[in-house]
Image 1: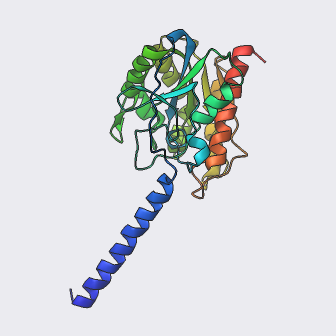
Image 2: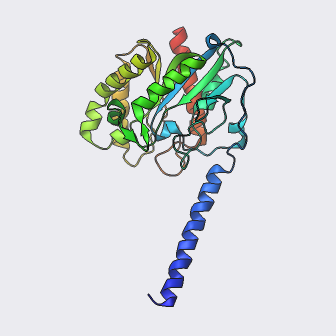
Image 3: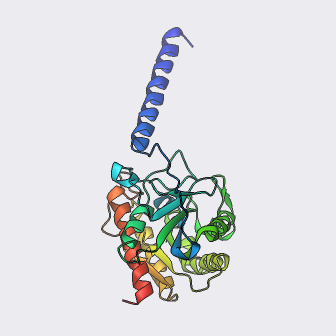
Length: 279
């Protein structure tokens, strides 16, 4: 390689690396710099635990803004060591190089408007971007997380702090790629949710399911997954589906933007209240 080509290669590599660094800096610009640990841990009976599971739109890919990092004294999450901390976005630590805004904190904030003042909320993440439902069922290791085993471990952690009250589930984009996976999606939901409830020790545990968005370049398949989700929900009185059809994407036609993530959290909270009250 002559010197001119060599220097051109070095130049383009430096531009690429600098661009990647800027992109990551933008993504993490408002990430919280300080982790706050509660001085007093509430009694277990006063803590409602919700486990977040699924793939990237539950893991969170939205842009974190200052409003998403303001803690509430009644909303908790956990750190990598399983210790209780005040919740700030992003909550998911499974994929640090891709982490972004999820729906958890907005769910907790909305739920506080509907539950007694004595109750606190604990949000525990198990979602891993790109994971298929079959990988969850088979306890596959994906992106260094053994999916169902990790869920079970987080259930044990949850029991140290409170009572498991529900699961928030958003997944299906990875299964929308083939007709076979679409056709099997309802039955696989039934299998997986049975495993979730068994791990939690509650066969009636509420499970809230988010639709796939309406903005995919493969939208017909995404909506076919949504139809499978609604078919499943008709068989399970302890589940409820929330709509996401009016949400927008972050520019990639795959992931909800920040506004969509915050609204999804609110709708999950409203759905949980509806299941509890029957209204």
